[in-house]
Image (cartoon, rainbow, N blue to C red; front, side, top):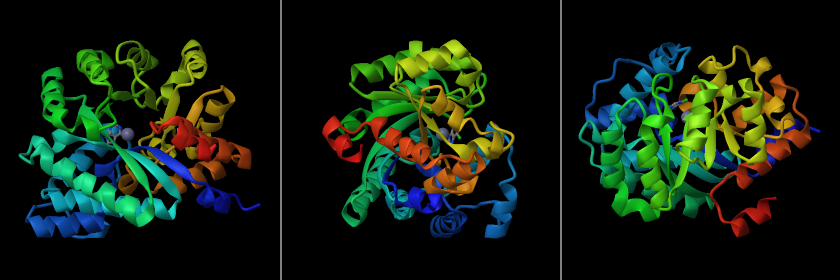
Length: 326
Ligand code: ES4
Ligand code: ZN
């Protein structure tokens, strides 16, 4: 009867999670001290007060600034371990996590430091919580194609430990078409392809992500609903949408959670999933996202079960790994 308990108890996969977006204020201060990095805050309260953004760019400015405290391999490991500890409490059994190497390499942190730290955290989560996980390398779309290619080449020795590539950061003005060639190279290297599209950007960007980037999964995709034919196509192609309700509310992709389209997405036959995006910034982890949108939209138990089931169907696990969760 208690939908909150059902939500907690459901095994879930998390498919849209920026590891840099799990940096909680407490850890930000601890790492700033440990690494002697200046941050423009004196207390956790000041940090929370600064999280007053209402659009993607204002959020990203703080998110990139905070990432400066991540320096050593151990920092990336600690960040990942803290996320997995929190995810375990929500019965996340599998996570496919984004990382933004350019945010780190552009300030002199070696790629190897970043990925070795994250892989160490993932190993610890597997041993401690039995959580499986995969890494998705995201290109920053506000940087140019050349920079994306440099990152792609830097990552090449690690391709056996990366499941795919993604595209994130500022959306409007940075269309997917800019990255068609590097996504084609990723496809040739047998990497999966995902992209943020239709968060703030128009349905045209979703079309481009499908037709030019050949995505296997669509991150956000909210604005696809403005285009009926596009919505029908996404449903027909069984495209997974990684939807992030608390992020959508905080960044004003939806003006009010009571107007969130999650149930309309399901009604139109879309394979929607629920995810936390940047939980340290948007007010909650995956369970909080499920509970908040379930309450705001009065979701049925069946809808919650479908959303969790979709998270496995949309994952990059093998069929034999997915089957026990269906
Ligand atoms: C992001 Cl919510 C969101 N959108 C685009 N890029 C991002 N990077 C981190 N969070
Ligand atoms: Zn995102």
